Structure formats: C-alpha cells, structure tokens
Length: 374
Image (cartoon, one colour):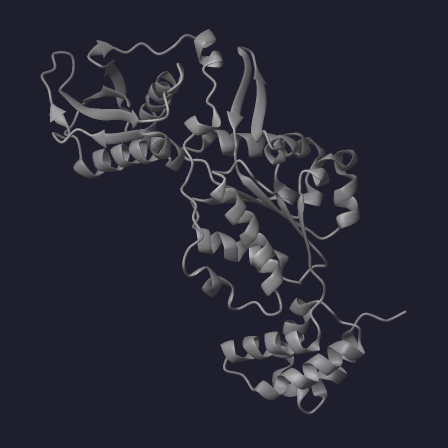
C-alpha cells in the first residue's frame, strides 16, 4: 500500500475582514478544480482542514488570514510519478492567486516555505492527462428525456450516446470523435445542444466554428479551471484556416494544444471527445488535405425527414402555441408541391400561415411573394 500525506498552507493579507461567502467560494473552486475524477480514481483526496480559516497576527497589514488544505494519496497498486504532486501544488498556486481563487498565496508546503518553480522548471512541469482537472461526465439516467422532442432520430442519438459510453468506460482513452453531417435543418445542432443539456454545462464546451479564431480557441481552453470532457464545434467546415491548426491537435488522439512562447513550448492536454456538425461534407473532407476528417471516425449522416416525421414535427410546434392542428396538412402539402425540404422553413410556413392555410389565402400570398422558380 502506497500512502503519502501533505499539508498546504494558504495565506492572504487584507485591509478589511474576510467575507465568509467569498472565502467559501474560493476554497470550493480550488478543491473542485484539482479533485478530478481521474485523480480520485488514482488515489488522491483533497480536503480543507476542519479548522477552516484562521485570523493570524500581522505586523505589516491590518489583517491576515490562513487556511490549510490536506492532500492524501493512498493506493495498493499505483505510485505517483515524480512530477505528480509538484504539478498539483503548482496548479493550486497559480489558481489561488487569481481573483476567482480568492487571491490566496500558497506560503507553505508540509511546513516549509513554498517557492514557485523557475521559468525553466515551469516549462518542464508539463501536466499529463491524469493531472489535468476535468469535469465529471456521466450519461444521466434521464438521458432519453432530453431528446423526446426529436422525431425519427433515435439511431442518430444512439450513435452519439455510444461514443460517449466508449469514452467513459475507457477513462477517455478511447475518444471516437463524431461528425454529424447532412443538410441544414435536419436535427444535427439540436442533438448536440440536447446532449449538452443532458450532460451539463461543465462537462460540455461549445464553439461556433464560423466565429472562432485560433487565438480565441487556445485562450478559452487555457483559461479554464476545469476542462470539459466533450467539445462541440458547430459548422466545423467553416472554421478559419488559422483555427484548423489547434483543431487538429485537439481532435487528435494525443489530445493537446500547443503554443510556442519565448520561454519554450508549452503544452496542455485536452482529452475531450469532439462532436462536430457539418453541412458541407465535401468541404470538410478537403480541409487540411483530409487530415481533419480523418480524426472523426464516428460519422453520422442525417437526411431530410419524410412526410410522417415532418407531420409530427409540425403538430408538435402547433401544440406549443395552442394552434389548430388542421394547419399541418395544407402547410406540408404546400411545402411538398414547392420542393421545400428544410423543416425550419416548414414550421415558419405553418405557424405564419395559421388559419390562412385553411382557406388558401396564405398559399396565394406565398406564391405572389416567393422566389421565382427556374
């Protein structure tokens, strides 16, 4: 049995009395950020000392406060590597001095003054996947309820769920990135957003690829206290050329972002399952000479819904506004006669037409104002 215990002491000087709420928020954030599921599985535990914060004598400031964090490791099969605990300490040091961390200074480690590592040591102190703080991610018992509003997409939802289950069961070693492709308005984004709702905001991070730059993507991920387990990229094929470079790294099985600085190459692990929506699959396949598409092994295709599914969707939307279910039939007939396949346009015609669909007045209005057909 391998065990070790450590005590970290945090101190803060203040001009006024410490507010219990701000202290509590900072401590909870620090512990939650470092106590990832992977660390706990390895044998690490993190607990605030039962004494809580203490006011201690100060000669150079009006008030000084202190609290301690107990860190323990216990495992019958695993022994921490040489950089694991120093990396945890350095991560806590960096987070504690930020406003969100309460501006606490890590002053002692196991009773000895703490000195942060030098710039050279910091570059060498690269956090491995099991040392990064990740949000817990589990498929909830009410998973199906988050997708009840979607019709005809049971198999598509099951494919996404299977990729999640494969990631969870392998402690995220297996990350079968998933691309949801097909024409606009067929349910791709709806499934992605419903999945985010089911898993929770902390477990899922979303990017609109059309408005994401490489710098913005890297900064967002580097600034996170707790990393997500799922990253959604909406319309990934429309990402700017500069954003494709970090995207390749994130979607790769190595799962990391790289940034060259004046002090050296800094890396950060991003062991997240990528979910991307794509309208133009041909364009997606050509990006980076096919390198990006090759990283998405779980390919899920969507087609336009048939009449039965479209009818169910229209009836659902009518019910939401307490409308007349009789609107659905003429709305769908008009769409079929005019080659309108986008469900979003069908809903617009149905709800805007309303009673005008029943006497044909709205259809006439549409014909008079619609785009000329070739």
